[in-house]
Image 1 (tube, helix red, strand yellow):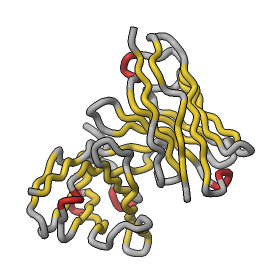
Image 2 (image 1 turned 45 degrees about the vertical axis):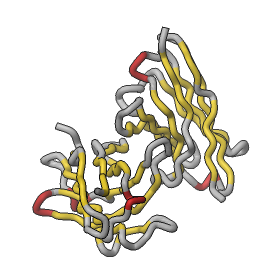
Image 3 (image 1 turned 90 degrees about the vertical axis):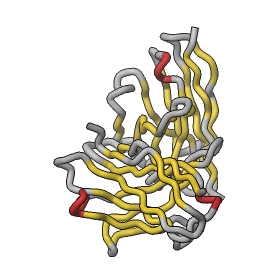
Image 4 (image 1 turned 90 degrees about the horizontal axis):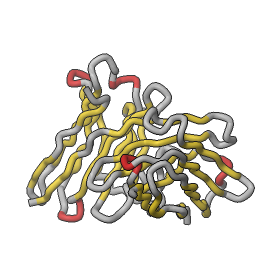
Length: 114
Length: 115
């Protein structure tokens, strides 16, 4: 079955960096565009970034533009999110999702705190 | 003004129907968008329910009961998720989403309580 598994979350100090990964299985990863979405504690959903199936087209939310970088390795069936210059307001559960957000992974928690 | 606005909460009785609205900001025409709907229960990731643009352009999520359906109210510039025959298991947060100006945009979310 289709499965997405995020990893790489944790506690990081403001200004620090973190790299999230999303391992995909159960479908032809290279056929699908992918997205990262986050959810701050007790809050709603916020889209973070999009990458096309080939990786040639990328979009970011204004809140992360210039700080976050999305990428993918179709040979490894993996999606990544490099997060730099992290701020307290980046604290959230980060989800990866396939295509039109179907399905979603279980998420990985990123906490930015000193 | 948010791009997508949803009522913060809605309560209904078991067996009743619940109509969840997703209102697009003035100047953004609902007719041109596919509207996606997701259900999120506490402690779990969101799950895809369906997408709706028109009766000829719609998709039900795999395994999603037919009592979940989508529509639009052009006069209100809103997308609608209708849940018929509410069940206790439908108690959850519901989010709408569109692709707008090279970005995905989520609605503010509606918490549905089944009394």
